[in-house]
Image (cartoon, rainbow, N blue to C red):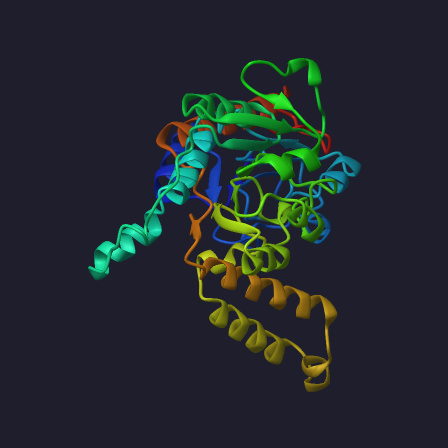
Length: 349
């Protein structure tokens, strides 16, 4: 039975082909045939109702991620489609990347490298700040969040934490659970480690930023939409947010292509697929999409923003683990068993 893989590179294709003789590789979701039963995707592939309607025989979606926000879990459950994921792979990898971003900001590496390149460095222009005795606010205390806490304690930071599923009895010498507003008020650095759900969408918005310590550093290696990008830009304009380390964005196309080119492509697509009347009719959803695209591009252009293109997961060890667990998930499903079966309520690391 064929297993269709999307978002794979050559080394991954070689591995999957050796482990699963049934493996086939598609460039785009549109290339997956209507009679496909087994599918493996990564985070950029959206499995929505329209795709499920067009693939009525689909029985398994094996995502090579912990997060599930790119999959319509409710529709999959309603149709009896199994969804498997890969828990635990980012425990160390994402935590280490989080601190790479924090250190890049605290040591002002972007400015220092640019000054060195131009030969105009002054001590004042690239002056850093110490992490020791600073307060780190960790939002989301799963496996990744706890690894971040362990690293932070090595830097002798004070750590406070907030989790939607708070367990105050777990507070101890390493960290203390506090209400969300207290975390905003006290933290010099806030780092996000929560899944994207209805409860966490735009968790950091205008109201939250207004309660933050002035000059706070924001780090996001979770999902882009946990932060309201427009509100973040406003908070950076006003000096409430002093810097940001981002591995994710609300619209990650700007990590791979200039926003002007994306907008041009969309305009061309509209003109090619719609009548003149439809092409010029105001579409509120499309306007919001373009506004969000512009806000993301504006954010990345700031000198006090350090960004990486959704790379926090991307270590040799983590990718090997992801691929092996994915093969195990698929093989067990094909043999009538199951492992790492996810649901809409699955709590990621």
